[in-house]
Image (cartoon, rainbow, N blue to C red):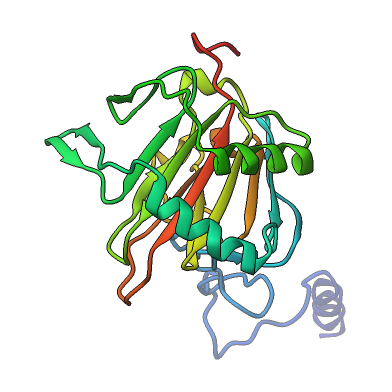
Length: 272
């Protein structure tokens, strides 16, 4: 009896921990792994949307000064505004004389849909012809004496030399000139245009030419508005004609007549 007890104690010492007889042996139970979370929010992929672009408000220029409106590989586009270049009383009689003595006529241009008459009257002065919108103004070297005086005064103040002049008469609010640049070959590269105004104030609007990736879409380009008053002078210099367009739009309210003189330098043969 004592031998049996001793053998039992020896065998039990090597037998390891007692097994629970109430649970049969089985494979471990596997549970589903919990998803890992990075931070406090779960990441969700979304398709990239279109970039929101805003139509810029036009920049208003109405005080005397020099304004660099843009810079590009073409150069700096610069405006110089002198609101009271001509004294108002002087400007009054000049306007009356120009309106009555300039030989105004309505020019016929050629557009995509055929011939059309410009919605304003014009007159050209210069030793050479001037072609734009597929029709030509013939040479006219016989300058009116008042125009010669105004050219000389403009040259003295600006330090520029001008040999030609395009006169425009806007008879009322329906007269206008559409978007364009003064970039004809005979004006050369980066021409200087001096614009002298008499009569009713009209807004001279400018818009920057769009970059190549916009494929001619002007929706989001910069705009500049310059109210041109009686007796004011606006000088366009540098890359203004290469990088910008300008116009005088029709208006919805009655406007009295306005005369605009645009002095320029013609380079026959399109010299650069």
